[in-house]
Amino acid sequence: MVMVLAESFFEFIVIAVLGVLTCAVLMNHALKAREAVAAPSSGRVGPTRAQGSAPGRMGTTSGARPRRRYDPVQAAHPISDRLRKEERKRIVDVLNRSTLVVATPNHTAVVLRYEFGDGSTPTVTLKGNNLKGLKILEVARQLDVPVFRSSKLAMQLYNSVNANKPIRHEHYVPVAELVSQVV
Image (cartoon, rainbow, N blue to C red):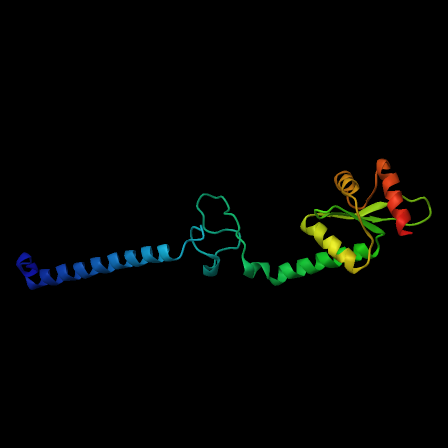
């Protein structure tokens, strides 16, 4: 039937080649559609990092940066590990020079330092909430730094005093009671 449509052998070859190319294009689209259904996309548009795009840009055309997703490979990255170790070392250094820790049950911790004599004021040397507060409490227990549970005092100190600053006058009495228990 194709031979009837073509008036010469050359036209027959051209029609056959176009038919084969059309089938190849349709098969390629079908395979891409099947891959898209089988492996859900990560929401990224454009090249992935493995293909060589910059770490911050994912190839979006709108200019907005996409949300970063948790990547276990990146979480165990040597730079991230180094930063975590440096933060832990800083917490250990501060707690080695501290007098006590005031904490809440929900992982808010305030580290106080008091140098006896000279009428000095207790100083908030470090404070943390959630994960950082939990790390402070963990290191304090390892270093045998006294930890006092006082939700009200811990939240007042956390909200009203910055790190490396002396406590405010309204906190003198409750902090003095805790310091007297340590001595």
